[in-house]
Image (tube, rainbow, N blue to C red; front, side, top):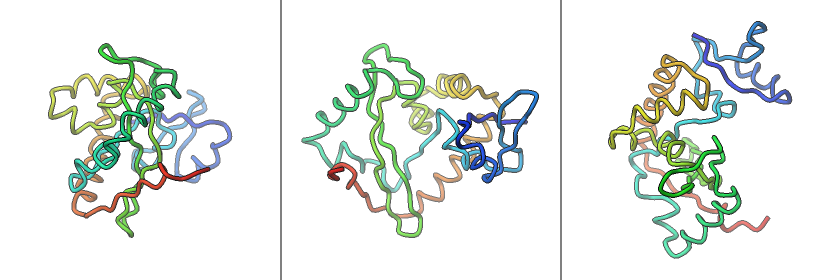
Length: 185
C-alpha cells in the first residue's frame, strides 16, 4: 500500500527526512507501510483532527461567546466564502469556521494556531468522531478519499492512527491557549 502525499518541491528534502519515499513511475511521494501516516500531516490536504474528549466543549466559541460571530465571519470573508481545503461550498451555508489546534503533551497545552473556512464535508472530516456519531461516516470517508487521492486502505489506517492519538490525548487534562487571537503582529 502506498499512501500518496503532496509534497511541494521546496519541501521534498524535509519529506525524505520524515521517511517519505519517491515513486519515480508515479512521480509522487508516498508514506511507506511501516510509517505512521499522520507524521506527514503537513503534506496531506485533508487531515483528521480529533479534539481530546477531556476538552470537548472548550473551544473558541465557548470561551469567546461575544466575539465568536465576528471572528467566524472574518474567516469566511478572508477565504472568499469557499473551503480553504477543497474549494467547495456547502448546500445550506457556504462554509463553517474550523479551529486549528496544536498539542504539547509535555506542558499539556492545547494551543489555537488559527481559524480556517471549511465546507461542511471537510469540516465533518476533520471531526471524524462527530461524523461517525451522526451517521456521516460514509460521506466523510468518500470525501477524504477524493480530496487526498487515497484508497480505502489508506483511510482505514489513517483513521485508526487518529483514534489512537485521540485516546492518548483524552487521558490528559489540557489547558487552552487562545493567545493567537490577541496577538498584534
